[in-house]
Amino acid sequence: MLTFSTAGESHGRALVTIVEGMPAGVPIDPAAINHQLWRRQQGYGRGGRMKIERDAAEILSGVRHGETLGSPIALLIENRDHQNWLDVMAAEPREVPDDKSRRVTRPRPGHADLVGGLKYDRHDLRDILERASARETAARVAAGAIARQLLATFDIAVASHVIALGSVPETMDSEPVPWEAIAAVGDDRPLRCADPEVEALMVAAVDDARGAGDTLGGIFEVVVRGLPPGLGSHTSWTTKLDGRLAQAVMSIHAVKGVEIGTAVTAARLPGSAVHDEITYAKAPAGFRRSSNRAGGLEGGVTSGEELRVRGYLKPIATLRTRLRSVDIETKEPSDAAFERSDVTAVPAAGVIGEAMVAMVVASAMREKFGGDSLSEMRRNFDGYRAQIARY
Image (spheres, rainbow, N blue to C red):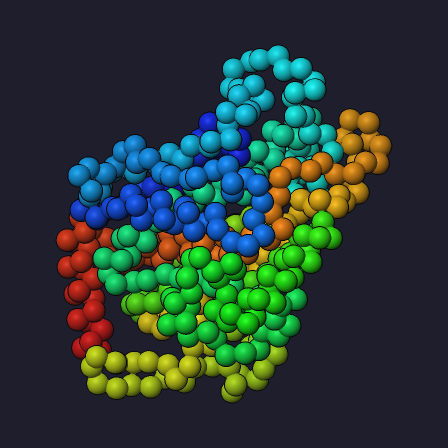
């Protein structure tokens, strides 16, 4: 199984991620990792933090001469803004004057501030918000970039795009955007929407929200192409790939809903208008589906069609027009605290979604095909492909 864990605070010295379960011999390109980190920082409506950080990952272990060793891979991403927080975020005991402590006692609605303070008995809510910050997702993107490089050796590609931002567009009942159109969306596009006309409306919506001191949510879609049928399992709830994907995408900051395929639309339709009929043609096509409303998964198992997962992002909870709150020390009504914030981060969430989906899919590949080395994993993969062709 391929797994990863992260550590670090938003304004701490650095973020760290450790990836375990990679086979030996996978080519690793550091520039490709840093490109994914760059993509996460792009998008119209981002805040001031993106102007400070220029994220780059340093590989500390697990890679030698451009190839994985089969041992844990450790990556470090420095927080450049930490230089402005040396006293506030010091690990050792330190007296910090009240006017420089950046103490937080007014929890922000929609954040982990209050519930985290209650759970961990912390009366300076900075102890909560530093780790709960979406800054942590940079470490996830670095881990996902490692997984993507494993998937690429099997010609499996991952991409994402923004399909809704705020109320634009107003309906989600249109046909899925083809892979070719999604792959063609440039990373320099303001909101990474496949339709330039719709994207222009989204940009205008961001401008309106910024002017009102408000924030916007939206919907991103992650698409994976080239997966073999048979990843995941129907035999146990813990092995169903759709459930694992839903948990992975739901764990992204501000994501409050996950959709696989056309589930939201399908819930309003009869079965005859939903289920994907099965076809067969001689090699190399084999068994296929006449449509892909299931999003590439049936019974918790990949079907061989494109995997499509959507994340529904709530508006960012830190608003310039501050919401009502209560000071946890005085118990008096007060405006919520304000930290630097984006107007929207839906395109960035799509990049994070790519990373999380890549990790889940790569883990399923490792479970299915095993191998201590990439060459062994490749033999098992090729043998399975030959088995399917004979079915």
